[in-house]
Image (cartoon, rainbow over all chains, first blue to last red; front, side, top):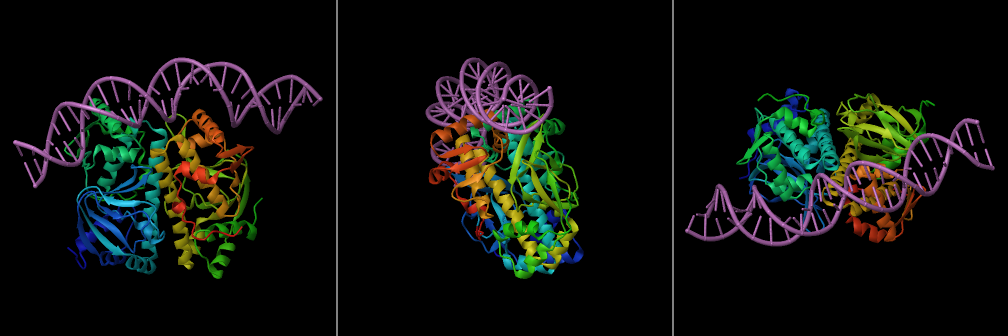
Length: 248
Length: 248
DNA sequence: CGCCGCTTTGAGTTTCTTCAAGGTCCGTGG
DNA sequence: CCACGGACCTTGAAGAAACTCAAAGCGGCG
């Protein structure tokens, strides 16, 4: 269902950017008038593949996506999860060959924005360029935290840490509150994101539930004891650099 | 030993940037005339610490540095290694609070460049801004590859992969050739970078040596069988995005 | 109702860790 | 010149965390 220009779609991007930096009225207007092509995608579908040289970026409007790499025979590493407001392949503006793939996790609505329009925007508004740059830097900060989790946290804390992170990211764009959020991913996704197996994730989730830290059913996560969850995760939100919490 | 402006120092930065993008003469000149303060540091010394809000960036001129986080009691995760030409804290230009620390590995010479001078440079030369942005994006690509290693490669391939990466990074700035390079890090550093213990790294190195893939002594790494090493690592250099190999 | 994808559980195995003790190398000081 | 100390490397033995393989249970959707 292509759409020439849908202000509601781009307002998701504005909200995301305002969760990490300040936008002037003029900048907000310029972003809202970016040309987009809206598209609905089924779950589990590749959007961009490793080796591609895309000429557009992909803004998530609804649903979840993930970046991943495949190594060896069928071993998958999920590199990040993406929620509405994210542009998971923003790096393709300046790094032309994809070194990983991007796929939907759930049924997803995305908006494609031509590189040309984004580059033009960054030329006219250097401050918007800086904010996009900042967004990719926060992306990198999250990678660093995931590396730390995979290298130095046991499964229990690793899962807890991811839950804390996803909750705060969703909250920052107004998609979660009261320590409750949707988590539309399978245990196998979780395992591939955390460097574990689905079996071990299953057993560790049971431990988290047994300790009363979380409730997780029907794709809904409830952090019943947020403080204990962050403690188990050794979670410090600094790395998310959410300097301006978005209003709900 | 402060120095008002040392063209030799900044030529290391120019060489690094030219290994990932093209610079015009004017841009090169502007970079070479950045104000710097050169400083010699001993090994194992913090340069910037988690929580700091630096007002300058740090260019490595000689020696190695690393970024790291400490979690829990004394568990360390090394996030990246840095070699001459790198600006490991370039992200501090737009992400003001450090979410990790930066330290020397060996005796190191660094050049500090004020944020103000770098921001001014990026304002005057948007293309230089794009190249700096690109550099931080390649940084992120390397994080993704490390995540993939830690999540989905066993110790043997993980070590092999790091060796391939460091060799190519050194080669790209003219600091290595013929599958031989310096590797001035301890087995404990290696362990902390790869999410292993020093004991296990030691045993796995023995296996790599025993298989004839590498020679490693006196801080010198020789990839005796480069092709088998890359194969063991499932190494694909795409993620380094070395589009313009620097001449030696 | 039945299928398919996802979750759960069990049993046995591997990889990696922990703890502990020697060994080697090298710089420093007597 | 040699003894000493400290940092780093090496090795052994035991144990824990996580994996593999396999099967059964659950649940939502067509």
